[in-house]
Image 1 (cartoon, rainbow, N blue to C red):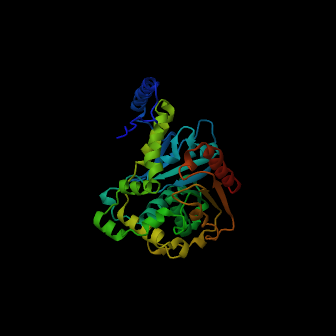
Image 2 (cartoon, helix red, strand yellow; image 1 turned 135 degrees about the horizontal axis):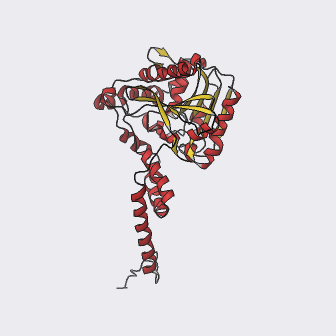
Image 3 (cartoon, rainbow, N blue to C red; image 1 turned 90 degrees about the vertical axis):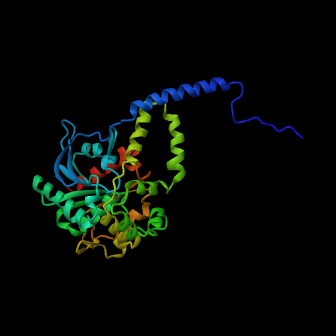
Length: 359
């Protein structure tokens, strides 16, 4: 019998001990760095709570010393994940960028729902919590109307709110906001359309944030669960880059549970029936009519967005009653729009310029 070749050509030859020693040193240093950065802080801009109600907190971000701010804008974030994505760290912060543009930045933090919130619906969130936050700021600022900036699902909420309360909104900005939930390249929508949401909510009450996070990761399983951790090995000896990685991981897995009834309504009316485009979305006892949105609209979308494909956001054009519609195209992905170097140079300055021309 011919002797089989048991060599491993992909392993280094004579230099193997030196290479292994180098790898061991890198891993040792990396684990020391990882131990130092495991408790990284997120949210770099000082802020003050202006209003609290149940789990919700309304914040105002403090501008840098000497920085004048004169155009108020209220950020409406999604119920999924945490809003510090918009203020992740120094130099990678949409909030910082907006403050630098002279905007007076406020944010709605929905908090973490618990079983007592199981029966909260979209009416409670939009016509209740959000509307009261708007009224608090209108009274505080002495203004009849506010600028709204919605992020992702929060952008969908901002569209609905602006249609229901057009007299309280002066300008509407949406960022990576799903509008048409049935575009051909929307993988998330294709998956969610087949979920028996009644069975899920009736059985579980609130919907686990961890289960939703697993669903999002399954859209690109290799890149989001395998490839990135292999890539992390190259960051272990760079404490700053490793800290950036850990901050992002902290945000990704910081997933609040979803209030059962609000989740049911959102999945059925938007993902499954696509009623925002087709017509017929009901929030409480009122129907959302996008043609009631007559204020200026700026729609910011990301070309490489795998969660909200560009076409899903671009559908906002022509859907509203506004004669002042603008779009800002970002050459990156869903999260990169908020934390990348390109975003710092394009997104906040673009929003600031657009708002200033209309204020």
